[in-house]
Figure (cartoon, rainbow, N blue to C red):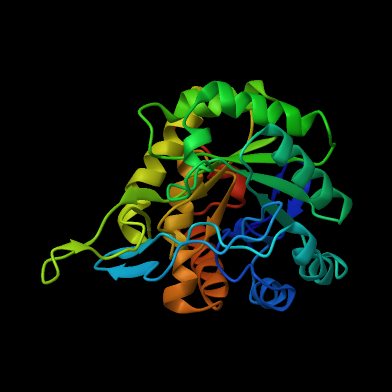
Length: 302
């Protein structure tokens, strides 16, 4: 019997899979459904201080090897979301609260509210590529990453994970800035900036024109980013994200340096049962290649 348990900043996980932010994170019932399907932890949708409608339709287009979206961070605001959050944490499920803001003060206030309402950790969304004044517009600047992380860490004791953008020439610089700010882990990566055009109409399909690409096509990018962060030896665990839909995909991310992984777009394609499927496949892979536990995989390729 192989041991697939792992640990992130003191949070014990029954397996290395976590629900990524932005998928089935709107309600407490949908989050609990994912946990019961096999995920070891749950990341909420990204929540801001105030309600936000996001971009107008069309906001999603399915392409050959993934999904391009420009939702624009729609959310009900933290106060309206608390009932959904409490529904999950009261049952003891590990929940990572994803938050976004326009400055360090907004991030700190949101993190405090999330922490006071029972989340196991905070994820700073410093990487959304399609919301003006938020996400990657802040997260592409190392000094801003450090400042926001530092201010959040100074106001709470819960673990803080920083979700990094791949839309940069140097993701290690961003990871290093987050570590200098005191983060407890890095999440790599968010979606890759992209565009889809309609040749018949002669214009972009998405109302925002630019969106974030996710799914199988970005797996090589995610692996590269995790590997670069892993080889840099920054001293914090890495959560790998991007194009994961099989047990072998998980093994690759672990070998590149990840301690756990997040799964998002694969839920769109395969439903919540994807978690049971990939966990089973990971166990089979480990048994076939005589790995006894997750720790033997982590960083193997480095």
